[in-house]
Image (cartoon, rainbow, N blue to C red; front, side, top):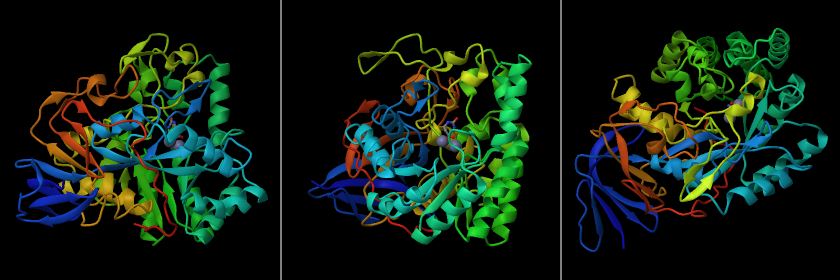
Length: 472
Ligand code: URP
Ligand code: ZN
Ligand code: ZN
């Protein structure tokens, strides 16, 4: 039976308007001021906002790191995403098998049967030679049209500048988008070895050994390489004011370079790493300063930055203790691995379930972003940039009926229980929030109903993408 979302306030990237919305066959079938209720299952959305399901273009699920693994897998992380109003995520395939195809197959083997929302993959290119280059056309057959490269993590993930340049050129020729993790690996390695030699091993040294200028330099270098390769570029997890300034300059030259930030870089600073539980905030790149936070907000509001993703990559704070998840006892080594030495703390944070909640309260309700900007930054823009639009990130007739009905007068405290990540802490524990998705639909199916989880592992579909996505 078709479902009629009645009398809601629809919010898209362009407009806010009162309307009914009809779901049929998993798609949005009609959007009109008044649609007859006859023969339909009616969901009353009066006084509520109806938003497209969020698209989080940057998550890491079940990712091996530092002798452990990120604690949300493709079921638990996607379930948390759904409770937070996000119905599509894009995960990264590590290049850890002899061929790209084998790496992708191995990632599907982990993800497909567990996926709880729809998902796509980016491909990490962390080893590059003629054989890898020859495999690029196969990526299109796999529906993967975006590649992440790194200027940091020497001897592990980093490519040289010439290799990055070559990747960008081939990506351009195939209509793919290159994503860049921009930090200066050489400077970081030197500073880390000096800090360790001097016995500076506390979490704050994670930030002190990864200077902000290393990112400004590396993101400008990446943009210059992209300009020389005549290729588009997407800068991931931007967190430094100088990077936003660079991006503004680069875009003013008419270059196809886009930028993403994440909530942690809007709300926290290096000072959080000086807390006794500072390991909770360890991720790469690190937290910065209040001035950086403010410049990022400005970049979101003025359109210099195109997306807000999460870089969700959680670890337990104390992985020696069990937690109960869906009735099962779970224990996964986490941040305690680096108790004595910041270089051993797994890098990454929980966030996929928090993203829209904290951004709504402290972005929209606080007057920093409009409703349409919120939808653009968290759903429509990432869908466009990564070739998922208008199927995802959109309230349009014919789009997948992925939507969230929000109550924007709901007052509660955030925390581990609300966000539902499979980890033992939340960065926003105790934060007062004022809005929450009450019902979430994935392709027309109700998967979150208040506190009730109606979804199941394997319901999420892999989204094969086509080359030539929009440049914003
Ligand atoms: O600390 C982080 N961000 N871990 C995930 C890997 C990455 O570079 O995005
Ligand atoms: Zn990265
Ligand atoms: Zn990441």
